Length: 460
Image (cartoon, rainbow, N blue to C red; front, side):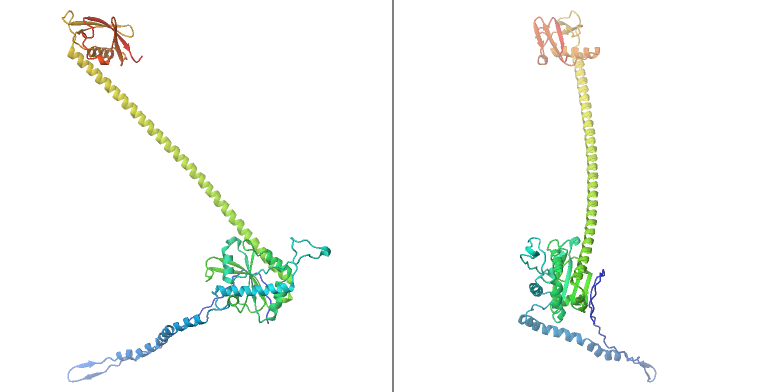
């Protein structure tokens, strides 16, 4: 006897079929080899009959392979026949589980049947968009739409899998058996009940609904497939399934289903429609709570991940700032080192230039010498320094202004006077002698036989 079963089952309902063929080849073994001996005069000979055993088993081995060879030959010969049959008799509406067009037509046929029953029953569902007339009677009757999908099983499953894992709706599956008289009655009295229609239509949305409804006849390929998978024995049959996994829906290799609610058998008609609506609503609500909890955990993980990424970003920014400061410090130190080296090099070159200048001045004075007092061609020079001190020195009239400068350079060095750049001039007559006049002799410059030369510090 068929019974109605209603249970919140969390185990995954799967049905697997397997077939195995085994073939064993007869085997025979030769009898132990027999040996004999014959003596002829002096000597003996032994004869081995083992080759006779192999000769006996060979026909049996050939016979064991005969079915396989015949099968291959039949497949090769019948392949053109299969092609001609498929061309002459193309797949119909209810042929093959991978015939998407036929599955869609079977689903539309079921939707048409349900919609026809809705039109007959005319269930009244409160519509908030219309006001009630006098006496509480509704002014306009709005026929509810059929909540079941008009697409085949694979297409409906693909739409569910296309949704995020934390927002996938439950799959409401109804299998209709045209040969059971209770099937049409269940559709008319239960699936067309106002409360159930309102529940399914309100939770059936393409984008954010919590239930996807699919119904088909067990005479269709999809119906027979679901009947075998769930092991359905009684009708009417209705179940709520939670779809898990991802991937292609053609083979459903990565898709599993968790049975949330199962109702089947003629005894199902003894339960009031509002009670079945309560069962469905409770299961849908629990599933929504589970999805909400999973969504909350996902948001928490994302928040934690965001915080970790923000901390990592701040750490990387701080590390980068430290590295930039270290680079700037190293660049400043390198720049300071180069500037120090440049200053030292400039000072070294300055000192070297000053030493060369002093050495050249001494060499020039040693070469010119100081003439004795009263000698012919002597020029007596008196230098008035910026500090008021006067210095006397004898020169030859043919000595040049450069010789006078050489004398002052050596004198300043020996006296510790810091005067590197100086100028020469006379008051009577008023003349100035720069670097360009270094080649003039004292006589040409009008400084012989005697003269008073004023020394100016050009850097003061």
